[in-house]
Image (cartoon, rainbow, N blue to C red; front, side):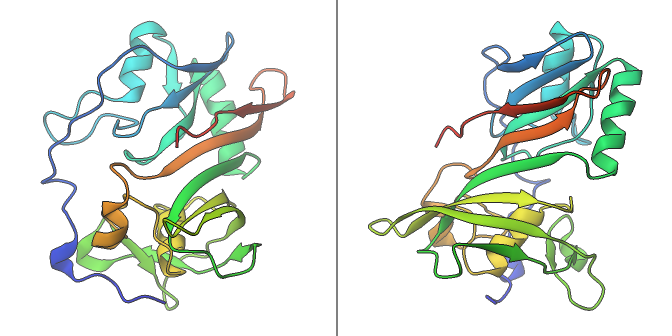
Amino acid sequence: MPESLPTGTIRSMASTPYRPPEHRGLSVLYLSAQLIVVDKPSGLLSVPGHDPGKEDCLSRRVQAEFPDALIVHRLDMGTSGIVVMGRGASAQRALSIQFQERRVRKHYQALVDGQWTAAAAGEIGLPIGVDGPRHPRQKVDHATGRPCLTRYRLLDIDATSAISRIELEPITGRSHQLRVHMEALGHPILGDDFYGSPASCAKAERLMLHACQIELGHPETGAPLRIECPPPF
C-alpha cells in the first residue's frame, strides 16, 4: 500500500478558490412529476458550501427551473455524472429510504494511474476512517475505520499512457470511498489532488471519476428504473 502523502502536498479545500463551471443549461437525464435526474458537471458543488462565494451549486441550478426539486444524495465537487433529486418532500423521503437501505445500485467509471496488474474483477474491502487533522481527507484505517466495500471491473488499459479505465460499484457509501480505495491499491484516480501524486494529477485537468449508471425504484410506483450517462472522458 502506498504511503500517505506528506501534509504539505495536500491542497486545502477551504483555501482553493471555488470556480464553478459556467451554467449552460441543465443536462436532464430523466424527468417525471416525482423525480428529476441530472448530469452534474465536474467542478460544481452538489449543495451550497459553508464558505461565502460557494452559493452556486447543482441543487440551486435545478431549483431555479424546478422549485420543488430536493437533493437526495451528493457527488464530490470534482466528480461528474448522475445525481437524483425528488420532486417534493414525499418523493425525496421515498428515494432517501432506498439509499439508506442500500437498494440503489450505482456504477462509476474512473481513469486511474498506471497499468492495472490486479485481477480483472474483484472486491476491495478496506475499512475507511477520517484522516485525523486532515479532515475531510479519509484514509484506510484497520483499527477504527468503518467497513467499506467496492466492487471493480477492469475495462481497458492504455499501455502507452500508463492509464487504466475501471468500472466501480460502491456497495457502501463512505465519504471519498472510491478515491481512497483506488489510491490504496496504488492506482489513484487521475486529477485527484487529495489522494493522487503530482504525476497522476498532471495527467488530467479534472478528477476523472464519473457516475455513469444508477438503478433504483420509482418513488411513486416502485417500478425499476435504470438511468445511464456515458462518461465524457
